[in-house]
View 1 (cartoon, rainbow, N blue to C red):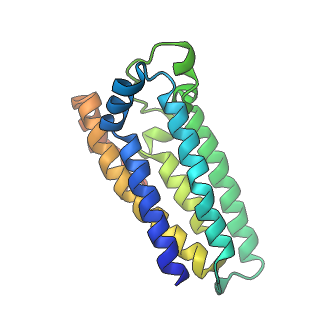
View 2: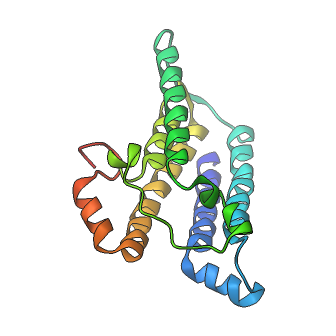
Length: 191
């Protein structure tokens, strides 16, 4: 039953999150509220806060251990998670991080972003997704609930990457098409 509850909750969260990320939602917001300078910040806050109930359910629903990696392998996995956090931070800083969060829009008019193809973005088009997924899958103690949430989050990330690719192609045109031809989506030299 925990699996059904978690997957249902993730599906609802994913649908709402995806809708709010769309141009349609932002345009509707603009029609109702006027200027959307704080939309990105509100979106990010909502996304983070609305995920907290999923984390709560993951911890509070009946659960059982699927596997537990013994020492020293669990320490290596933890090292991989630390590496993932470092790479997430680097990838985040290689973008316009203030705009990504939504803070820059509070002080400056929102403008079209620049296509970032340097640093980690030279190796994969979505390093935040790559290292976010690497972080969760390097969990050394996997329970039924964490496995369910990680599978759901992975599926959502892959679907999100598909739609984000379409959005970026519209936004950046041939420059993004060329970048796609040269650079892997998530896994260097593979996908």
